Length: 245
Image (cartoon, rainbow, N blue to C red; front, side, top):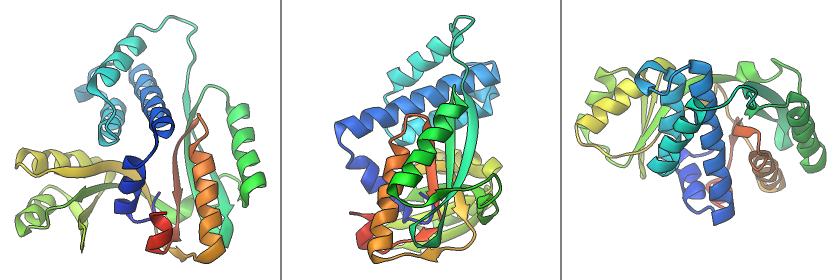
C-alpha cells in the first residue's frame, strides 16, 4: 500500500493469519499462471512479466515448489482454460484519499461489481478511468535493513533514483526497468533484501488520522480480500500506530 510505511506493510503481511496467507499465495499463483500464458514462456529470463510475478511471490514467502508447479500447470493448460486479464480500477476513500487497484480477472463484470460493493458498503466511491491514476507513478522499491554506505553506492551505480534512510533501514526507489538490476547487484554482493517489488508510488501524500484512517484501512483490507484483486495502493499518509494496527 503505497502511502503506508513499506516496513509496516511487511509487518502486516508477516503477521497475517493462515487464511489470509493462503489467499495471498493464491493471488501470486494466479499472477504467475497469467504471466506464463501472456508471455508464452515459462522461462523468467525471457518473460519479464513472469520474472516480476516470481519475484513478488518470493517476497511474500510463497514456497518455491508452489511457484514451479504454477508454471508447469500454466504451460500445460488445455485450450478453453480460463483466461485472466490485467485490469485496473480507481476510486476515492475516506479522508479524500485516492485508491488505485490492480486486478487479475476472468470476469470483468464480476470484478467491478465486487469492488463497487466494497466502496458502497465500507465507504468511498468507485471512480472513472483516469480519475486518480495521474496521482501515482510506477516505481521499483527495495527495502534493506543494512544502511551501509556500500549498499547505497551499489544501488546508485545500478540505477537507484532515490534512497531514504530510517531507523528500520533503507528504502531504495528505482525506475521500473531498473528494479532487478539493483536487486541482483545487491544480492550478488551478499546483502539481504527484505522486500523488492514494482509498486505504484503516490506523487503527493494526504494526511489521514483518527476515524478516517481506521475507515480507510477497513476499505483497503476489504478490497485486498477480493479474489480478483492483486494490489491496492493509496496516497494516504497514516500515523504509524494506525499502519501497524
